[in-house]
Every structure is written in C-alpha cells, then in structure tokens.
Length: 150
Image (tube, rainbow, N blue to C red; front, side):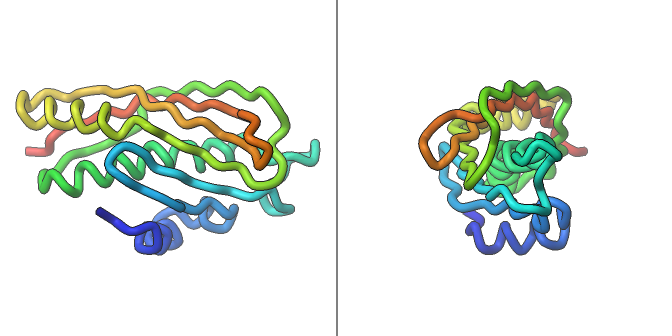
C-alpha cells in the first residue's frame, strides 16, 4: 500500500495545483481513503469560502487514490479515467474539510472484473466532504472507468 507521504510527494510533482491548494491524502486503506484541505486565501472564492473546484480536487483524490492503489496492487497495466461526476453543495466550506471515500471494495470488484473479462468497467464512487463540526458541506460522485491495457 502506498503511504500518504509518498502519495503527497507524487501529488506535488504530478498535480501541483492540488498540492498548492492544500489538498493532502491523510489516510489510505483497503476500504477507504481520507483527504483534507483547509480553506485559505489561495483556494477561496469571492464569497469567503472554499472554491468548488478545490473541493472537487480533494474529493476526486479520495476516490482516485483508492483506484490507483488497487491498480498498483494488481500488478496489471490498467487505464483509469473519470467519465462522469456530479456534486451537491449543502453548506459553505470553511475551515478544514475532510473528504472520505469508503468505496475501496467496490472499485476492487470492478478492477477484478476488468482483469478477468478484458472488458472495460465503470464504477461510481462517492466522497463526502465534512467540516470540523461534522457537518456535510459537499458530496461528490465520480464514475471511474477501468480498462486493462494490452
């Protein structure tokens, strides 16, 4: 399993806009990944809250880290891509926002099926963004596509 520290180093070099905005992987396991981002000047909107796209980067990372980890563990060459996404915003995002995705087993099953059948697979994964008071501020759904490379 990749450590959060190694993953955040990867983030710095491969997704520098997310790194500079303060997006950080805090925890990754078999079933879940946790990403945080803190509202700051660099990632705010004109309404004194976190810009929706920064929330989207953090949410996507919580799902994508699980996808990348499962692919790495499989030892196979697999392409991954977000085909669709949708988001719901329920409260202004201020302070530290924690995005959690608990769909590790779901993506593992989709990857297993892609490897077994050789056919592309899709999998919807959800990330919940919660503020420091435990209030959900946003929910993001990402449809990941997986295809084994030949």
